[in-house]
Image (cartoon, rainbow, N blue to C red; front, top):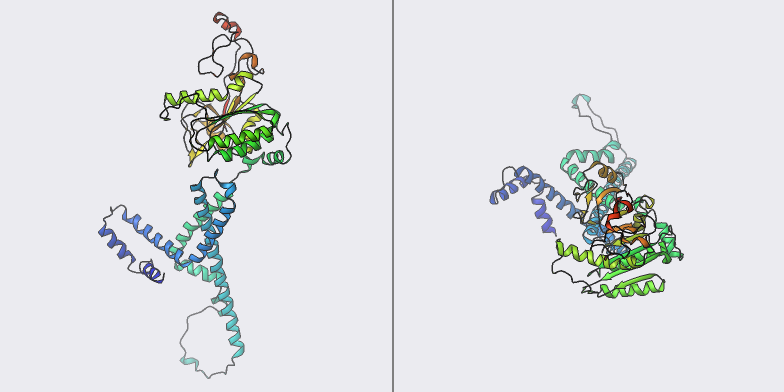
Length: 472
């Protein structure tokens, strides 16, 4: 390690040969003239960072060990919902913060202790030694430059100020470091926002003291989902949906799940979930290893994929279409989501909506931008705040539900009436006989027997307002 330190010092910014070495390297590997002014300071910054890491490697090692230990203890809460790359990124930035704090504390403590030692040692020497006056001819003395007193010489604040003044590159490096440290602290502190857990305490209470009627509004909710090779997602999803069922009340929900063509343990996990729901006496239909519909060879965005998804989603809604009895549908994709977030989605605008969609985030932005359109029908951006039209833009900026033209992002909640025949509706839509048959994409296709003749359409159809879709 000593040889590595010597080599690093030889090319550090303190060495007069560092710039010559950079220029020599640039001459061996030519760099465009416009990039050389950028290459030079970046090289020096990297050398500075490397030197600091080598000098304070012990503090960095301790910080990484502490953060890794915290991460291992919190693993059951973070994974798999918290993406591993982002978790590592946050842990790295937090480790940098701990490392920098340790370095600052050590540096300040060392300066304070050193200053205190010099003060005590000076006083000890003044008390111990006896001085005899000397005969001095004042005419032989030369004027001396004014100096600070001994108690001012070792002032820690002035020493730090002088050090910063003598080392402006260090100030620049510390600025970069502090920016990274503050970013790490911000990411760690914003893991959970107050708006994300308004119902968290109620959900926890519902799971501690379960009741058949639940702790919600008593609304009848039809929970539907479909899965394919989701062995990593299902344990978390099942755990959170079970918590949601306790909150809504086992008597107020129906669970319909369809699994097909999976090659992992998805079916086994859902079969265990079926037993759990049986214990809770929850109405359900969970189908595994289903082959009712042939999966297309390619699941790229194309008509075969869209038709397949429509078919299996309609199949998952089949118990609702046949029997009704539920006013709200909650349809979930293979996503990581928490129970209190689902309750937040269901409670959008106090339930005054036709369809509300969650935000499905992937990597660093909106995941499924293909399916979402803003209020005017335009495409949305993958980056926050997602919308360019003013109403949606302002809604996202103020953490309010944004009106959209269409959406299906990860999880959706919508009114059940549009999917039911008139005789099964609860009154939110017209219960009069239909004037035209259902399209073949409707879950209730084929058309019911009480079809009204087309000539009476103008007289029997009520005037309805447009759908109210919201992105939450």
